[in-house]
Length: 321
Image 1 (cartoon, rainbow, N blue to C red):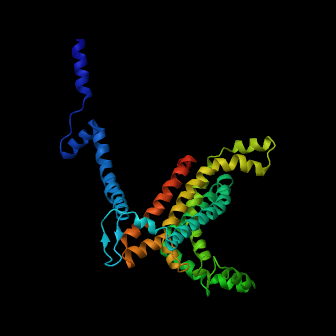
Image 2: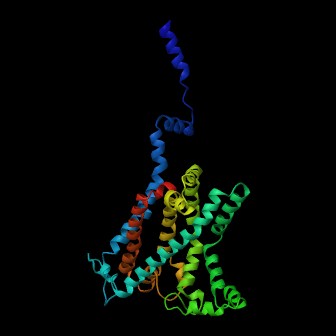
Image 3: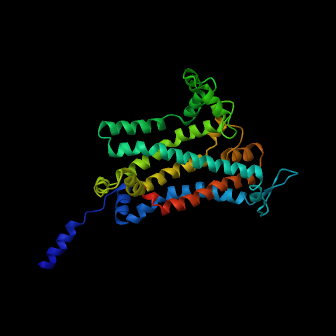
């Protein structure tokens, strides 16, 4: 009787297979969950491997070729001469200019973002925090090009910023800034300073949000304990708050630094005639037809970001993303 009872219970506990194509597929996926995982991951992995990584490898391969100076055709022989051209004064100046701009934009974004993120993480509650998120995210919903052209009008010689300086009788200050040999120009819209301002405005939300997320993870009792132990606000910030918020700042810097490093639209619309890496790639590949040199320029930000991401990982930045 016992054996009959077990057999009966086992027979009733297993449901019969469902009919139809979808029913059989559902039963197969239930019995073999790894098959479902494989089918779900295969399309994006193929896309990533063929379209993205494949194109990067093709780009890297092109950088080891050279251009024939007489015919203008690509010479498909392995050489490092194209990379040697990056060390020419003109090309090396483009790399340094782009790197310095990306570093300055990242530093400025961090300095501006930290107080905003700190206030939101420690003091903003309820509707004020919702208003904060709306204010940070709202600019990201508008068109990238519309924002750039709007800033071009603002920074132009006939723009509202110049008008404000005139009304405040500070035109001499604006003229003095524009006369500076490094950052000046005929107007802010055709100067490095204008390019810097627009870069900071465009990428600032990408610094605020990771920093705010990192600051929210800082326990409030640590700050109170630091104060109870006699630490000054400056000491609390330097020894408690900043080290714990640093992964979020570094995570935000990944966005601001990499996006500035590869952008070519903002320097094309706002800024001087001197090229950045993105513009050099566009010019060499499109106008000059020098695909190997364009590929070599493209490898530069990849190498820089690989080193930067390695350093960011050591700082625990990926934990704050």
